[in-house]
Amino acid sequence: MRLISYKRAEAPALGVLTPEREEHFTPVPGLDMLELIQSGAAGLDRVQRALREGPPLPLSTISLLAPIPHLVRNVFCLGWNYAEHSRETAQIRGLQARTPERPVFFTKATTTINSPYGDIPVDSRVSEQNDWEVELGVIIGSGGKNISRRRALEHVFGYTVINDVSARDVQSAHGKQFFKGKRLDGYCPMGPWVVTPEEIAEPHGLDLYCRVNGVLKQEGNTRDMIFDIPSIIEWLSLGMTLLPGDVIATGTPAGVGFARTPPEYLTPGDVVECTVERIGTLCNPVVAIS
Image (cartoon, rainbow, N blue to C red; front, side, top):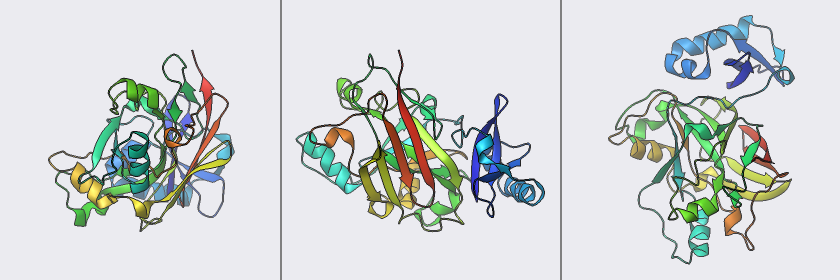
């Protein structure tokens, strides 16, 4: 099942892509994505009823939003979760590459959320070193605390695509930590929809790609994650309750701009495409703001 959020009047609405008709969707009245996740099986029954009863409409008639336009709290993110990306980061910083013994977590603010085709706003007064990072996003369905690795995937509602846009010069200026450089407004395009687990029974074999102006920059596979999804959920929920609708960005493969020779960064007029196999593609223009 593929679920979308779209703009209707001033409020986000929920839809489901129509399996037998490409580029069509069916509205699901009375629910938004977060309400659907929080309602569990009863909400999914309403989606199935809408598919049976509702008329399919063309996707071209709506504007897609991020799957959860208004998160309940920050996006949980992993740093250095692909070995090659960890190595390229260490090399550019003149450090010895090490495989993390535990996941490296940080967060992106709720105000970073951007739509799958929305403009990435860059302000040269803030950053001139904006970078791309394609990632698999995991959305929590049933919450919990101290979730075991064995039961972790039972807590997953679905999967999406994330671009963890990063202001590298801001990161460096603030002690090479993630907090500020990862949290600028609009720096987390997400979507284009949520794919539920019955369509992706094994999420650890998905190809990831990032292209800038049609040129391939990143290519990886989720099987290469240092910490797989069950491990991430187990570590993250240790002593901390995960909530329905929480979003986890699982890390990025090698090929980011700041580690290239010479370094490459996004500039106004660029178009960034981030793809995860069997899910979809984000396509975001880079636009100057002042």
